[in-house]
Length: 119
Image (cartoon, rainbow, N blue to C red; front, top):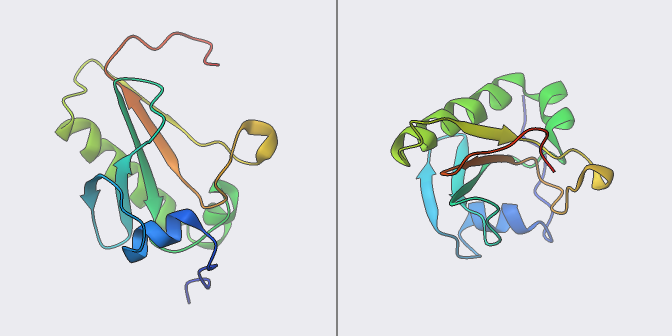
């Protein structure tokens, strides 16, 4: 499958390309993980696919293995960050759910008790 074209105005595509600096936690063949600039927990890392997909649903329908890679990367990040007490993974899909950058990204949150329900 051919990866979709990267939009010039996508912040996360620009991070993948190295045009915008980010504190990279883990970079692999299909994913990049970096620290969120507005952390909501002591550990807040974003995991993104290197290919541009607008959101998790778009990624799942076009590249389900890429979606699985994101969760594998999230587990590796949690291990490296010492999140032995647990961690949360969150996709915000669409503006109504709080998605502000329209490139699929998985939040990895931990380092403090995370209550339920979230929000």
